[in-house]
Amino acid sequence: MSNSEGLRALEEQRLGPVLRRREQVQPGTTDQRLLDTEGDSQWVHTDPWRVLRIQSEFVEGFGALAELPSAISVFGSARTGPGTPEYESGIALGKALVEAGFAVITGGGPGAMEAANRGAREARGISVGLGIELPYEQGLNPHVDIGVNFRYFFVRKTMFVKYAQGFVVLPGGLGTLDELFEALTLVQTRKVTRFPIVLFGTEYWGGLVEWLRSTVVGQGKASQKDLLLFHVTDDVEEAVGLVTKETGR
Image (cartoon, rainbow, N blue to C red; front, side, top):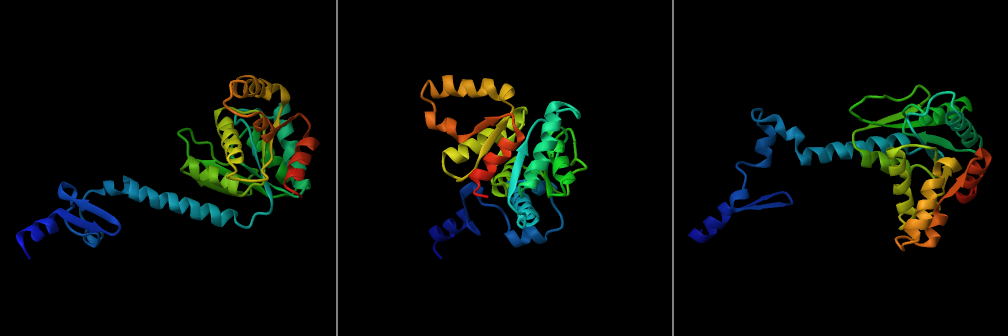
């Protein structure tokens, strides 16, 4: 081996699909680092290790939900109090969706989510909760029959869309708005098809809808037809009828 070849060998390292050169070359081999019982434990917090945790969350979610029948995801505020009109609407929606042949999927928390899960359970349907790890621990509400807890929001959001045939959105805060606009974007860009989105509560959603119409569409940031991507209602039967019609059930 010539001096130039030897120098190149020292300056280039292939670790599976990864190529490292010059000062980025790491000492030892991948097997050596795997079998070495000594060393820094910070590797469990590295991005490659996080990829495995992300992968495991997808596998667990897919495995838990793959055999669900047709389902509707119901969103709404965790701060909705029991006994309020919004909470009672959540119960009624959960029951009506089950009676229409759907499983009910929520974020698994309290408030509006609990109400929809409760309605589904009381109607003897399938009540699903997809929880998320948060600094303030909430846990899954007692009306969830199938529950999966996630570390990562984007994995959880994938499950909401993948295993649901539509969304019903009760009044809610930033998390609810996040899910709503995620769904609208997926439908607008045709990443998903035949995906009804129903906003429940005309008074609550009215200001947002008017802003979309007068400002977003009015200034050319979206088209008029984008306003047809969702429906607004105060009627439980109409909400269930809309998702039933658009899903072809």
